[in-house]
Length: 277
Ligand code: ATR
Image (cartoon, rainbow, N blue to C red):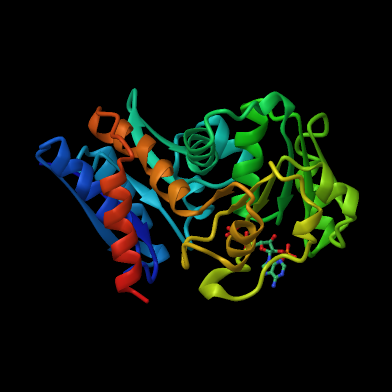
């Protein structure tokens, strides 16, 4: 039986076993996917198992996304850009790390809004943490026109935008109306909206009617920002799709099958999220 897992601390809430378990069943694989709730001291044991072929690989979550880079033989470009890893796998006898959040976000965006022309899409990215970094990488790779980064702590926005000086620039956190009015896509990557509380402050009425309002928070599925967008009739993009799509690459790398993000999988994970509330 082939095995994979998610490693982290205090992760009993992780939805990854639900997602991968669904695909294992769908493809009738002799495989399993489990939660490994471990301490930092136990990380080397996980790498030993991968090197010995006892584990195909793993997902990595809080608080080890950066710490695991010390144990890798090689990092893929998205992991190098973000300095963090969410997926580990073995290839050509090397244990490699990658980050699938950015490509997962882009797959969700393009899948939900297939008409989007990224080369003419001006993006306003709210937040400058780890998630923002991954998504910025995905947007740049996909050829987005320009990305404006706004963050509570302005220095972090300047630092993040500085990674891609030809494509990104920092803007003031007191968002000027023209910055909001020019955006074709606004993405909240901060934790504001989690538990249904708060939203990044900007005047949504000033957005274009076609501006996509996107939130990566998925609990609740409809955050205050997305609720306001729905009331204003703006197109939206919720956070659950990114969670589902970021998992695709790991499954493919470990088990050699590219799984689909089906409406049924989405319903199952939605129901699971609701049962935890
Ligand atoms: P993640 O890995 O989920 O991106 P993170 O790296 O800790 O988490 O980043 C959190 C982001 O949310 C940061 O941009 C943070 O802003 P600061 O750089 O100013 O800390 C932002 N954030 C968190 N709480 C916030 C709040 N109450 N208001 C505005 N931004 C907030």
